[in-house]
Amino acid sequence: MALRINASVKIREWSPQAAQVFEAGTRASRKFGHDVYLTSVNDGRSHSNTSFHYDDLGWDLGVAGNVRSKLVPLHRYVRRWLPPAFQELLEAKHVHVEWDAN
Image (cartoon, rainbow, N blue to C red; front, side, top):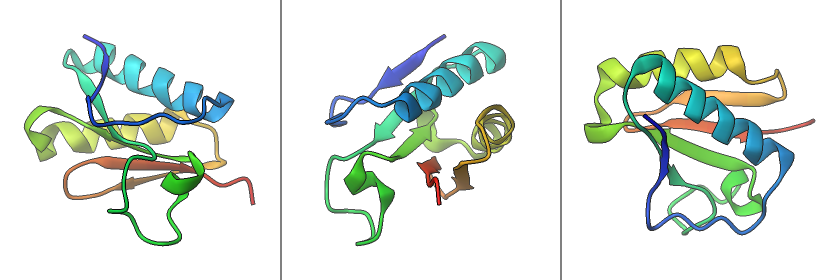
């Protein structure tokens, strides 16, 4: 099991925060026994104008088929694993993670 990166994902800047999100996704995949997918970083204009994605500080994590029964535990795990400066939101088809130091 692993963190897989969708082919459409564009990672423009590597940061310590990105490393923490990647590690959280990797650990979750091992814990739950299925792949976790990085489905979005800074790769399009489908996010709101104020999205952290455009600053390379927003990441979307998903599971195969966007199965809610797998997304909920992923969300809970990532919330517990990442430090408080991160926000983790359970959305319809993914877990949105953003880093806001303010």
